[in-house]
Image (cartoon, rainbow, N blue to C red):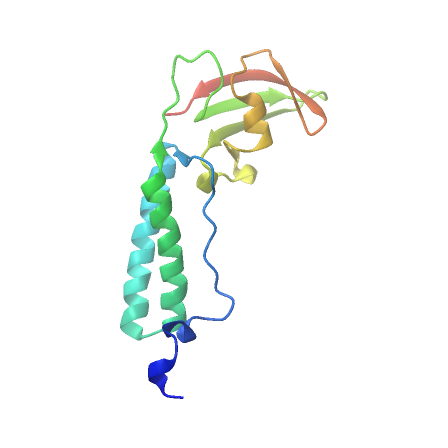
Length: 156
C-alpha cells in the first residue's frame, strides 16, 4: 500500500493517550496559575526543540501535554480567599488536630497543584470538602477519623 493511504497517526507512539481533563471546576490559586503558565512555556520550548530535531515521539508526547495544559489554562478560575472570611474556603491554610493530639496543616488548592506530601490538598479531596464552610473549633469526620479545626487563614 502506498504511504499516501496511511494515517498520520502511524508516527504516534503506541499507547500514547490523551491526558484526561477533570470534569470539576478548575479553581486555581495565584501560584497555581503561575505553575500552569510556566508549564506551558516549558512545553512550548520543548516542542520547538523536538520539532527542530525531528523527534516524532517527543513531538507527540509534548503536543499531548500542551493540549492538556492549554485546556487547563483556558478553564482556570483564579480564586482568591477572603482574608477576613470566617469560614474555610478555597486557598486557605487549615490546621487540624486529630484524636491523638497531633496537628497537621494543609493548604486547599487546585487539582493540578495539589501535593499532599508537601502540605497542599485539592479542593475536591474528601478532606477539603469536609472542611469547606467550617470554622475554628468545628469537628469534621474524614476516613473514620475525627479532626478538630484549630486555625485557618487566607494565603493570597
